[in-house]
Image (cartoon, helix red, strand yellow):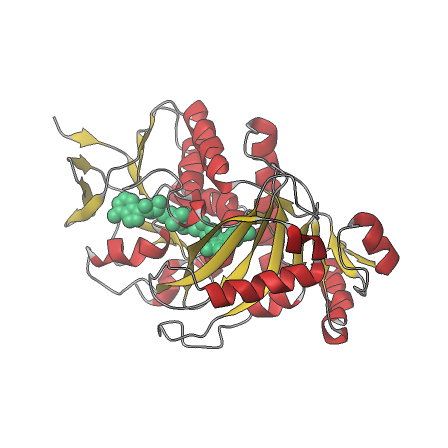
Length: 392
Ligand SMILES: Cc1cc2nc3c(=O)[nH]c(=O)nc-3n(C[C@H](O)[C@H](O)[C@H](O)COP(=O)(O)OP(=O)(O)OC[C@H]3O[C@@H](n4cnc5c(N)ncnc54)[C@H](O)[C@@H]3O)c2cc1C
């Protein structure tokens, strides 16, 4: 007997788990939803990243996108918990006067979005974070950010999905090797052991999304990997309690890439990001480099990042680094994720390309995709993220 599903979600990273969760909420209970991953759940980028839930006030649209998503994270915490959610807020740090001049600018951006952030002077900063260097000129504190452990969060989303709809099937270690089409569009998903008949597939494969899309022909999916080196200290040695980032991170991570992302000779760069963990360790990032699918460590770049971390939190110099690794951010060529139908192939949907904000944006991505899928009005205007902008 041929297996059937109303919808097959391919990719069990944070985005595929969020899409499955939100589809389970909005489709009638009993709808058969199958989530497939060729490896373990959260075995891709979502298992090799940081867990900062970041609200970005660049403009009203980005603010609504990130703010609503972080609100949904809090809702998941209330419903499920179990994923080390920590509402630390975020401290933006500066080393130079040029960077300190960005505090009021960012504060004004939060204000323009109807939110608030506080500029802290040197004394207030030391009271909040005594482990930081005494000569720092101050900081900007935004209370709305948080931290999660993404691997556990994937599990929480899938538990919520199965509670909403016991017909949700989660199948790790099952590779999708092709998607079949007929005159009406998508007709089946071919996996390593078998074929699943379905009229709807959601491509949530992160940096591998273009690979799956290639099996269908048509225009390529404009997503390339952007590597990040990370290091984590041992337990109970973190000198900081808040999610910390250099304010220059905003220029570095949110500005346009300074090199052609499709090349692989990018020298890379870094802006430091420090994240307290529930076990008392400190996760330190974060470098950015375009170099294809290469996941080997770049020790020189990581060392520079660690030196910056020690500049801000001198106690880190004595903290043992117990593990280092590389994750690949799915960078979309116009810097915005793709969420919605892929018009060239009826029945094919995409949710991918979230670069360094995929953990933050997972719940709203799942919600928007599920709303479009079920023909509902979307929670926020989602036009800017429709994949059709790439001419599919
Ligand atoms: C160093 C670093 C730090 C980061 N820090 C943060 C942060 O603090 N906050 C934040 O919001 N974001 C952060 N990010 C970004 C975030 O991690 C990503 O945007 C997010 O994890 C992408 O999730 P995904 O589900 O799209 O991809 P993935 O997690 O990679 O999931 C894709 C899945 O698809 C599966 N797959 C691929 N092909 C197939 C196939 N043919 N058949 C079946 N399965 C398949 C893969 O096995 C994989 O599990 C960071 C990223 C990095 C690298």
